[in-house]
Image (cartoon, rainbow, N blue to C red):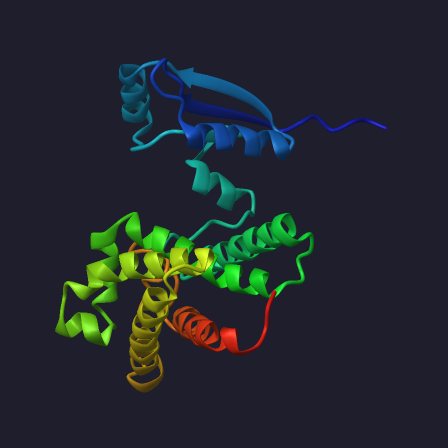
Length: 253
């Protein structure tokens, strides 16, 4: 039985001493994984790249050719091969799921290291506190970007603009103090304050005013929709603060 020959593809990508195009590497990997025999052409200088783009009347590289037909760049190649092409403007919950998942994993690891088991009250406390710190970190990467998005819906920030830039620092401070168990007289009021105002603001914007906004919870450049996730973040802070108040009455680890 004759074995069918591998399909052939030509790939033109920038490979210079200063830069190797990451999209070119991804295109090369995709073609090989799809069983193509790839003729890999390196564009070894900016001048050579510009000449190629002018010749083929394209604005970017890499460029893929299959059976003599120009397919296009990496996204075009994925579409040609029937693969999913990511919509950069599509809303997604993936950043939030990843963040909360990592916070939980860190809390369980810390509980195991300290108590020799993951089944502790401390693990639950740390998961919330770690999440607060990670959420604050996302906001602190671009405070101005966060503040701009936050002003779309936070009721206090709309009345006192500097609060939008204070919020990430307050959330991070409360999280760090809750991890350490120190200065509860600072962390508890801060978490109650920012969490309470945030919860009311999100509820009003989403469930009363029915506005469709992006959530600033993981930073100002996210495509996470405002709604249940942001409301959960704020209620989580309020719940953690309330627990810290009630904890001395009863439970240990």
